[in-house]
Image 1 (cartoon, rainbow, N blue to C red):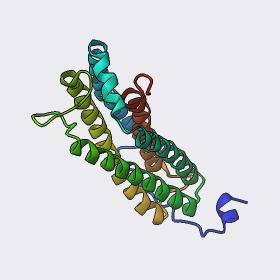
Image 2: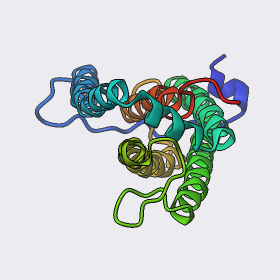
Image 3: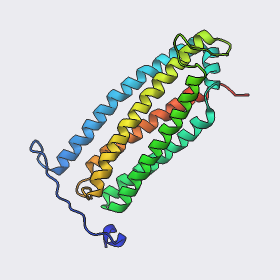
Image 4: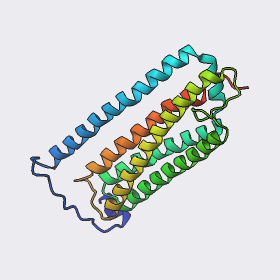
Length: 225
């Protein structure tokens, strides 16, 4: 008995057109995966440049970076890390549901993944608002009471640039999830065709992994008193 029959769900439509440039659905699926992996490599190079710059300046001004890190809201950073790890789990479950043709679990897991993404952005907005109020935004109104306020501004420049780009990728990811959710509700995915969910999952996991690197670099520098 199939998983769908066990779940008591009606069979979903499996009609899916193979684009004219592909021989069959399998080739189209492989091409989609290759395209996403190629895109992710360019993303790794993009974020790698920022990580390299951060490493260089942190080695030059360790005290300023440590002071800037200690000004971060560790509680919000930790909560957001847990939220994104959970979202990776629900995204992986969504991919499995699509591969096994279970429509209702797929819709549910995609919805929960989107909810986690919105929670992450909500906490990030709260954190950024506090930084604005405390004049931690680099520029003419920057103010910081740490031991090296001049070079601490470099830390906050990296903080806003890196978390800002990560948040932008989260917003794009939520757009992808919205598309997958709409098409999943239409019953477009199943054992024969689930490439968009797999590709969307790769993107979501990549964004989560980037945050796993950002969290210790921005929030966990040096021991806190």
